[in-house]
Image (cartoon, rainbow, N blue to C red; front, side, top):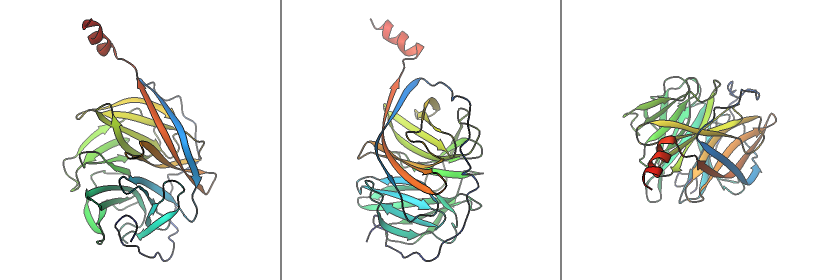
Length: 287
């Protein structure tokens, strides 16, 4: 059985949903200056085939596969991260007709849990555990336009509200909710989010359907600080999910070229953080 440890289910029929948020690329004023120099270097890039509207993305470390949603077919698939070949496919529950965000976590060795949300009107998060069945996990605490999701090392979910540019952190029951307004994001809809290790803290990267840049933040356990932005590593017509792999220490990004050609790029990230005035003062004081 594939799709990690989830049973393979045949998919019948295609839903003809339309995603109104994935509009044409538009130009924005220069992004705000952060305190970090950020460089993305492409490792690999390939086109996807057989998908209608792929959107959400995550990486299942230790198992070594990408996990992606397609709201047009309302499915969750696992893929070979090196070439995008599908290794498993699972129908999403009928209660999530327009799936977008996906986040997976290894609840026990070899046993994965998957959480998904809906980009349109359904304000619930659903989950599947191992080879079980889909169940409603909790009411989504993201109040307006939930999009991408990801887990951090503490097993907490992060999700971005596309409409308000507010990022939320909550547990797998939908409780212990914290939120931060991200004023440095552009005003158009956000989409993808991923967490990653950053100098002993948590890094957060957020992309938008038509941003043209990725925006990076640092979470120190209490506050979320903007540290900088960088242009997307490939030219795109629209940007969707992004995922970090601990095993590979690289990122995977789902994007669209033209009107209907979807690609995944794997890229490496370098963040060089400039010293703040307080940090430099502390260093001089130690001489």
